[in-house]
Every structure is written in structure tokens, then in C-alpha cells.
Image (cartoon, rainbow, N blue to C red; front, side):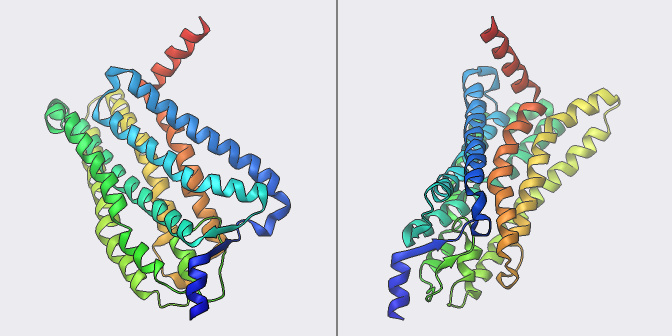
Length: 310
């Protein structure tokens, strides 16, 4: 037991993509380019919204927060992964591993809450357009954004404390490319039933709660859109929420595949692919979708491009 406790203090070895070690240089280049694009694209959205006062509305304030979450989420994992691919060093301290896990869960939960609030915002905008300014003032959207950040960072405290007190025996290799809840539970020789129970309880209250808020909001949105007389009006109304709906489907899909199951069914290879979707594809997709689907942002970007050419 003494060696186990000492090991918990020392750290872990992250296996990463050891099964395709011959492709590490190619993976480094690919992930580096993706990381640069994620940071650049999300910062572009933030700057565009910040520099254009007519975009200082609740919907775009939520979008700014979503961009910051995506930047933070990828920055928490990708720089360490790039360093491992470049140098071959796979060790991570116990504190560093627990911190990485905590930040990953915190930011993911913040995004879940924020996407739920964004769905409510779209419901108010489409179903009650004349009362939108009253029902969703900028001060209220700012408060909801703060709640999403606070809720995200408060939610995984229980998981973090429980996992940090576990013993990991002599088997200290994490078969993943970063520290996450399931890989740590998989190598633990401590009973993980209390952590799994906490997962299910919080998943039921938070995940299902936000999912229901999104589903109910879009139920009313679709009902309102279908009542519009002209097809052009229906198209314009639905185009304002297709970007958000696409992001919600992809984000929730990856999280469900990763976490809504017992740890006994944990599959390292499968989880790596789903985690890549969540950490790389979603933050990569969000700015692309919102740039292409959102007429306001697209018009601003086109206008700035024309000015720079002139």
C-alpha cells in the first residue's frame, strides 16, 4: 500500500498513440495545424463580435463564451499531446493528471450548460420575437454565461476529490492520450462504484436537465416555424438555429458515447476516437458552422475581407 500511495504522488505514463508510433510525426503536424486553426477561428469570432457593436446581443455573447470554452478545452489537452508526440516523453505528474481531468470535465460541463441556455435564447427569439429584448436582456445573458462557467467548475469537484484519493497499484499506464475519468477508473485498484454513482446522479440532473431544456425549446421552435405562412419565412427562422442545433447534436453524441455507460465496458481504442471527436472535431466545427450558417458574422467577415483587399 505504501508503494501505491507513493506512486499516486509521483505520476502516470500516458500511452497516447503507441500502437501507431511510426506516424507520430504526421500526427504532430496534423494536431498542430488543427490546434492553430481552432485557436485562430475561435479568436476571430470573438474579435469580430467584440469590434461590431450591432453584434453585442445575447446570442453573440453566448457565442463568445462558447469560443472561449472551446479554446480552453483544446488548450488543456493538445499542447501536452503535441509535446508527447514531439519529444516522446509520456510522463505526467499526479497533480498534473488530476488537474487536466478536472479542467476537461469542468469545461465540458460548462459547454453543456451553455448550449442549453443558447437553446432557450433561440426559443425566446423565435417564439416571442416582440418580447425578446424584455425576456432576454444582455444583463440576463451575461448572468447565464457566468452560471455556465460557475456550474462547470463546481460540478466535478466531487469526482476530483474521490479519484485523487484512489490507489492505482503498480499498473500506472493510462491507455489514452490525456487524463480522463474513465481511463483513471480503469487502472484503479480501488472500488469505483461511488464515482460511477456520482456520474449517474449528476448526469441525470445536469445532462438530462440541459438536454430536456434543449429538446423542449426546439419543440416550441419547430412548432412556431411550421405555423409561418411563407416558406421563405420558415427558412430564415430555421436558419438562425441550425448552427446551434448541429453543434448540440455532435457534442451530445460524443459525450453520450463516452460517459453514459458503466466503466466495465470501457474500451481504450474506442474512447480515444470519441475523445478526439469531442476535443478536436467539435471545437473545429463550431466556428466553421457559426461562420457559414450565421449571416451576420458571414457578412462582417466578407466586408472585412473586401476592405483589406482595397
